[in-house]
Image (cartoon, rainbow, N blue to C red):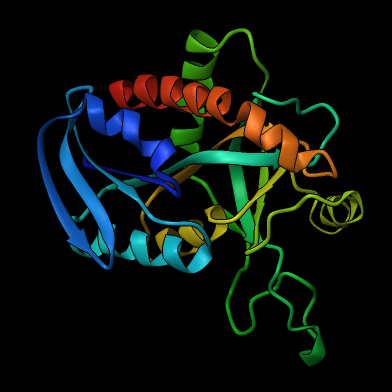
Length: 231
């Protein structure tokens, strides 16, 4: 199984790249794709850049050029629920885009017009294995499986946070996952979104993000290392 691993920022993928061997690097669409061996598995690790468009383009390149068998998106997110603490892990049950708004045409908020679904379901086997690995390598933190909501917005407002929870029943919010989920689903490629919580998506988000980003990324690296080894 060849696995595509996407992180939005250099900080989210640099450690993985350092641990790879037999590396071959290609630059496509201003993205650096690093192909090689990680935990004895063939992988392609790439920084997509921030936002849904970058993430979707990156996913399609992994599928078309590298013919990956699965896509895993790693990164940080803001918690939407009181029980999900900073440094906890959220695994995607499914994902949707909260900033799609075609209500003027009679669609509900978040619904992509003329598509069979706007909610994209993660691969059950990837979720199951990730939960098991989390329990082994990160026993000290909480692990949650639920909906991840994505939009081209950094959420740092309590009113918006409550709106997201009320309308979408999300567990966490970020800026890439649902676009990756949509691209993978349309190509019938299994996917999983992994998010470590860096902030509470409220007025404290900017300060908390800066303080806890490094801890959150270290947790996702531990999880990815164990997960790739068992796939």
